[in-house]
Length: 340
Image (cartoon, rainbow, N blue to C red; front, side, top):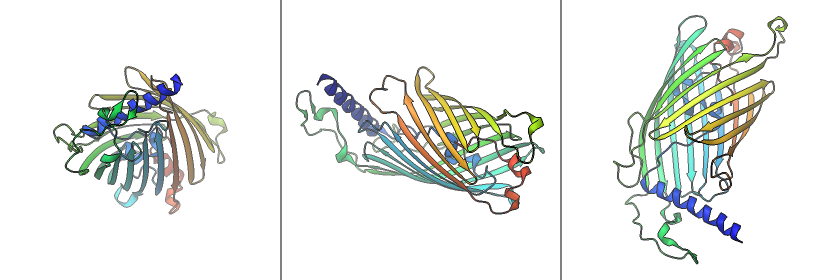
């Protein structure tokens, strides 16, 4: 009985934390654990990076054991335009917090330019323009003054609702990615360049702060070169690192993938610079143009017994539009970022 009450109290406290966050602003961006399964969200310079038309779908359920969970849906399409050395793309995202208490939806248009330094090195520059709308369901929120220690939620809150429960903003991002053959890549992205206000109360307190992302990775081929031929099937290990910072929020992700067609297995360690947050495990499947990935965030912080971690699913499909997309030279020129 006591354990049940403690669990219920934990869930209630977490809901209050979410409500307090909503009262000020939508402070941080949604998080994905399959970073490269949503490439346009990670860095606008990755638009067109596959050098073939690409469609991606993403789903994430963070903290499923709590009423204050976050459910995020994403979809994107991008392709490369070889005649002008450019990539274009469009992406959509919807983030639902607290069983729909706060819904953030957005659409983005992306453009990237591919600069060839020499036969083996490239630099991609990208920009993104976005339109977001936040909607708040005030009646579904729970506040501290509604709670009685013995009877539960029995009071009417005295909190003052905002004058408007809908907020629209325009946002801009930019990024760059360097790649060397099919061996190494590294990039940087800066989101919310104009720092628009996205809250429902004081605009000065609800500024969407700049988010900086630095990421890099390598591909190590485990097969002996003497056995490589026309039917060569690669086995690779891909170590990666991603650092993100948004105001006081800092996150370091270190991970590795093992690729042996048609399967990919991976693991990441997520750290907030001072404490460990989660271990991410992933299983992916790739066959010809189709790929599917599932990952689970194992919470290792103090919230591990309350949140239920996070489930994430991604589906991707690439379209062959001509022999130029299937040539070995083009495959080598593509940025060697992970599939997930």
